Each structure stands twice: as structure tokens, then as C-alpha cells.
Length: 535
Image: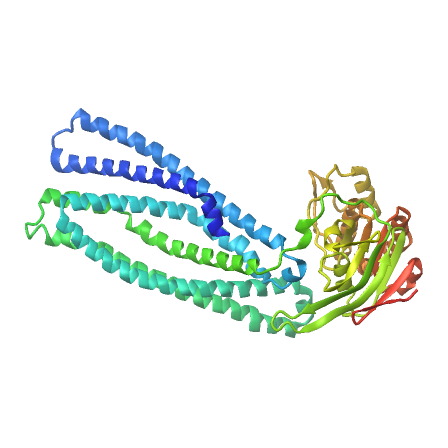
């Protein structure tokens, strides 16, 4: 992914590097002119030719610098945007069963934390290149005016770089470890939000979770991060010590050994002062963090490559708008453990048909396979055996998911209405909001809902509104009425479902409301992965 994206922008990167090289050459000319004036002309005034050359070089320097900086930002942000979009696209293409097994916190971190660090590192990296140019320019000029000073400085910098690299590499390993702990801390923080009611209900459970999970993970993360930061600080301390050591030969040794003149010493001091050691020293640790983020993004990319792609990419261009019969014949499904692939849940020989203008209720105990059955018949899970027929023709149901509109127990609400080719029927939307008693709670303005801060029952009713607006041939409702007030439960069974049937829709609803079983045309029951016809 990252290699392919960088390859895509290879021409732009080469273009940027050429402009950076041009910037470096102009910077070298400016520095040489300043040194020439300091060493060979002062205290006499420089001639007009030197002044004009300096002014011209300064204008060119400004133009190249501005262009190369903008170009660098454009390239870096384009690459980051594509990396982020590619990760999301790869996740989006996963089949549902594989997606449910992926470490979600790793995906969230990659999309947010890792790419954010890369984004923040753009300016840092550009500054590093800029300061490296200054350093290289100063080094070339030092080599020209005093080779012996140059080799003294190279020796000191080499020693500093060796020690600095040692601490940086040790810190990098700890940063990797800290990122892993951050994932664990993120997961624990998610538990606090998702399991808030459960924790609030049980003080002992709440305290045990805080002390044995959240607090320990936070402490581990803090310990590793402090250790890593201390190593980076230690590397900075050594680099500062060596930075000031550069002045030893220039000021205290070479002039008194008559190896350089006072004028050369002043020029050398000026050149060394041009080198921004502090910026280089403070930028490198951030570059190390960027390297860690890139490695973790590559790791996620490798993980996603192993995940099977969803069959939805092969949806036929000619879509059917209605059906006469969908027949499921001896459908089987195995749900396997990720670690040893031992089957611990299955659907076996599921055979039944669905038709327009009918209401089907499915009942069954917890763990009987009701929700899994819904995912299989809608094509979200790929069946392991059996066949599916639409109007007598064998099909791959995954290519016909567009026939279904579903509200599962773990449904998600978006703040906008996506997937509508035509304008939303505003009158129908307002009427539905009023029917669902949500018209005083929210509105749909500027192509978005004004709020999603709703109770669980209200969220389900809003999900129902979205589902009805989709106007699909088949509706799937997984225990929609379970937490609704009596008036909405009554409306669901005695008005909404009959209206859908009257309009030619097929409704499949999982329910335990036995008081309303009589409203269904057919009753099916799931029992340990097997489907039975009740009436």
C-alpha cells in the first residue's frame, strides 16, 4: 500500500528533490558570498557586483524556498490522504465474518493516531531537510577554508552520531512497545464507555476493572513512555555536550597552534553558528516516531491483505427491483474459531422460501442462531453449503444484498442519509418523525440530522425511519420492538408491519412478543442452528 502510493507520486517526489537541490545550491552561493565578504573584503565595502549577486541569489532563494516548501507539503499530504483512504477502503472491502475478527483498536489507531503523527511530522521533516542543507553548506565552506578544522569537526560529529544513534534505536524499541500498550489502553477506555451501565451497577466490578485493568494498563503505558522519553533526553544531553565540543579545536586549539588565522577562526565560528543543532536534535526523535508509525501501518496493511475480500464488488450492473420468490435450499454455515479453526457454531440444512406481501416471525432462545441466520440469508455471511434461488434462478445472494433493508440489534445510526439517488421525500420524513414521536427531538436540515443524542428506543425508531425511507423489497427487523414503549410496540405489530405487507414488502422479524404472534403470516423457530416451521 505505502510503497505503491509513494511509487505513484515518484515523479512529484523527484521534482521536489530537484527543487530542493536547487535550493541547496543557491544557499551555498549565499553562504560563500557572506564568507567571502567576511574574510577577503571587510573592512572595505563590497563592490556592486558582489551586492547584485547577493541580491539576485536572495530573490531566487526566496522563490525556490517557497515553491519547494509548498510542493513538499502537497506531496506529503496527498500521500497521507491516500494512505488513510486506502486503509479505510481495505477495511470496507472486508467480508463481515473476517471484519468481526479484526482487532478494531489497531484499525482506529492506524486511521487516527498513526496518520496524525505522520501529518504532524511533515513540517518537522521539511525543517530537518532544510537544516541538513545548511549543515552541508557550512561543511563544504569549512572544508574549503580550513580542511584541518573540517576533519576535527567530522571526528566530533561522528562520535556524537554513534552515541546518539545508540540511544535513539533503544528508544525506538520502547516506542513500539508503548504503541502496543496504547492499543490495550484504548480498548480498556472503550470498555469504560461501552460497559458503563454494567460497571455502574456493580461497585465491586467497577473497582476491580479500574484497578486490575485500566489503572494497570495506564501505568504500563506511562512507565514505558517515560523510559523511552528518558532515553531520548539522554541522547539530547550527549548531543549538546558534543555540540559545544566543536568549538574546542576552532577557538582553543587550532589558533594557538598557528594552524588557522584569526580571520579564519571568525569565519568558522560564523559557519558553526549557522548550523541549527537544536532543531536537528529535536527533530530526529520525532522522525523516529514517524518511522514507528509507518512500520505499524505496513503491519496493518499486511494483516488486511490476508483478509478475504467481500463479494459485493461483483454486484451485477442490472439490479432487480422486485422478486416473486427467494428460496433457500439446504443452506449451511460454519462459524470457526480464529485460533484452531474448530467449529463451535453452525447452521444446518436451512430450507425455506420468502415471498412479497408476507410477514414472517422468527423466534428462538439465546444462542439458537437467529442473528446468524439473518446475516446468512441477507448475504452478509457467506454460506458454506446449499443454494439460493431468486425466481427459480440460482444466484449468489451476496450480489443481491441491495434487496434488503435491515435493523440488527447492533445497528449504527449515521448523521446523514446516505445512498439515496434522488432527493429525500421531506414530507414523508416529517410525517415519520411525527409518527415516531421524534419531531420535537430532532430535525433533518442541511442534509443531516440535528442530533443523534437519543435514548436507545428513540435511536431504534430513527433507524426505522431511515429503513422505511430506503424503500426496499425485504425488511429485516432483529427484535426491534424489544425496548419500545407499549404504544410503539402496538404500532409496530398492528400498523407498520401490515402497511409494509400491503405495499408488497416482505418482512422478516425476530421477536419474542408471543402476544403478537398472531399478526404474522408464518412462524419459524430457530433451535441450535436448525430452522423449524411452526405454522
